[in-house]
Amino acid sequence: MKRVTLPRYILERQKEHSFATGEFSILLSQIALAGKIIADELVHAGLADVLGRTGAVNVQGEEVQKLDELANEVFISALQFSGLVCTLVSEEMAEATNFPGASAEGRYVVLVDPLDGSSNIDNNGPVGSIFSIQRRVNLKSPPSDEDILQKGSRLLAAGYILYGPSTVLVYSTGNGVQGFTLDRRIGEFVLSHPEIKVPKRGKTYSVNCGRYAYWHPWTQKYFDYVNAVDAPTKRPYSLRYIGALVADMHRTLLDGGIFLYPADTANPKRPTGKLRLLYEAFPMAYLMEQAGGRAITGTERILDIQPTELHQRVPLILGSPEDVTVAESFAKAGASPACATT
Ligand code: AHG
Ligand code: MN
Ligand code: MN
Image (cartoon, rainbow, N blue to C red; front, top):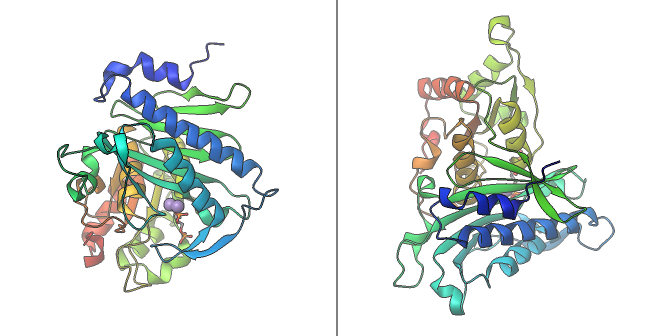
């Protein structure tokens, strides 16, 4: 069987991306290393004292799980000595972290959600890590917002690692989407899903229906639409919702359909939904578009948004192009101010 490992694959396609020779392979191999370490921690989580909460609350106002913190530390150690990364942005750190010494000259900003789907940790549900890479804009002065708050359309690469029954790494550098499965026998990610393309239309929708009462009318109308009986458009769709963006994204990417975390009215302080723009919505939108899908807020393309804050939230609707276009028509018909991203 021809086994194409991740390092071999990156070297064979070196010329396709806009990183300087060898730099992307170093970055991705360090991210893959972080993924292997986290995967191993998760496999033994129930046996070590890494389940549960740390008792701290992060900048998101959410209780920090021990594995959130551990995963964050793993990404810091994997990246800070590469000499390529000047700054790390993480869901688990209030401020962007500029790495000292030689790394201060690094040409890349890496953005991570070190552990996504934390509420699934203690019940052994699927979780993931999300990463993306921006090129530093201003090489002269210390890294600034200009380097960090860049539109998703400027991303050099994005990907995720899904810790499920198998550990899968999916990434894109702007030339399609590739998937690799961790072969624990050799400790390498091996090509398993080359050139992933999302089906034009699917048969599932993925949303936390428990928030129906808080949704804006257009979202309720779209939900009622996908649940109505209509054979020609293969409705009603089936509901699949795992509560971890990486897992819901991976299923949508491979099987088609639509994922929504829309804006709602539950919390006036959080009018634009729960998911974070920089390290959740941008990387997933980048991947979905690279696979032939779409990613919008409801009325706006995610990758066109100009970020203004590190941890700003945004409504996220992504998946098969035909399904997202139908949802978009509901949003545009009944667009509410919260669909904007301000
Ligand atoms: P994180 O664990 O990184 O904070 O992300 C959790 C997010 C995302 O993974 C998922 O799509 C969403 O939270 C689920 O939210 P609900 O539990 O409100 O459905
Ligand atoms: Mn997350
Ligand atoms: Mn997280």
